[in-house]
Amino acid sequence: MKKLFGERPTENWIRFKSDIKDFFSRNTDYKFLVSTDVAGFFEYIPIIIFKKQLLQMCNNKEKTSIELLNIMLRAFSASNYSGMPQNCEPFSYLCTAFLDFLDKELQANSIKHFRYVDDIKVACKTENDAKKAIVQIIRTLRSAHLNLNAAKTEIIPKNSDKFKQIFQDFPTLLSEVDNAIFSKNMNKINTLAPRFIRLTKQVAKQIQNFDDRLFRACIWRIIKICYFKNIDKLELDSIGKTCLTLLELMPEKSDTLLRFLVLHKNRKYVQDSLNRILQLCVYPWQEMLIWNLLIQSDNIKNTEILTLAKQRLRNLGYEEAVRNYIMIFLGKHGDYQDRRYIAESFSLTSSFRTKRCIIIALQEYAEKNILYNQITPTNNDLILVSIVKCVKQLPKPEYVLANKKIGTDIAIS
Image (cartoon, rainbow, N blue to C red; front, side):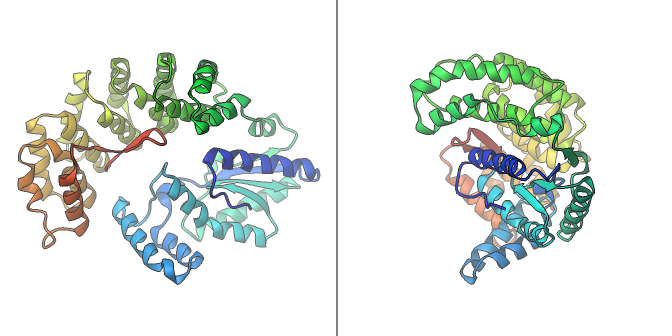
């Protein structure tokens, strides 16, 4: 397997598909493709095993850095046992390296496979070989306490329409847009943008045969375009409304859809729809992503969202991870009573993650220094002490970590 490091992720993904397509073209005796990925890959990577893998792959000079990374990951993890940051290129690289043990095991068993992070493809001569390959992948992943995603595991005949669909090339317009963005050619971007918006609208409307990869590719490029200055005004409302429809129909696509909707975070039509979705939301992870977007809003035009946030914050039995996001949301958009309630919660919780969110949430609380000054090395985790120090040094309140390079913001929770 080629190691996919050092280039733009788009180029890596295109080459990943191209390598598989070329292999099948050259080896006509291979008739089947196994397509699968790892269930909840980033969320369930065991930190202990991750550390062990890195130590085996690095020399002694990197040992201190790996130990430090291990401490940081334990602080990040809700369970203190597993979980890696997502949508962060360095961790995508590290997690790609983590599955090196799977590559070696499959190669040792003469299984021809290709991998992009946790997206795994296997070329097989017979359907029986494909089944054996799946069994081998399952056994190998279980050694690291990971599981195959059964819902996304398929054996695909080479002569099927599904096979052709998987390896259908992206429209050349995407490459043209990539080159314009990479070279920062404003005139070229302005010329290509209207055509690209039309393409994105067409992809978004194909709900019955929704092409997730292509839509996500379009969304990322629109986001990047919007972070350039001197770009002609783009008409994106229709795409935004389609994203809101898909958010209800396809909750599993929430991350991609909300990354686009953050461009319209202050628009009332977006906040009205998100309020409706929040009222009926049954997935904590989707609710967290929605609150994350609302944290980034400059103002909340739908007051029902504020009412809902206040109710859920005061429900002590509500999902802790969601309440943490709500704390940050009300720390920014709530009133004095909300911030006071959040401050009083600090001494009542033993959760490191909740305490961290409280520190972030109270940046505009008039009496924040009373709490901040109580967080000392003698009675608190040193990481909390460092967070307080960092917050105090900020020139203005910050509730998200902004990454203008990729056009996204991540809530500090």
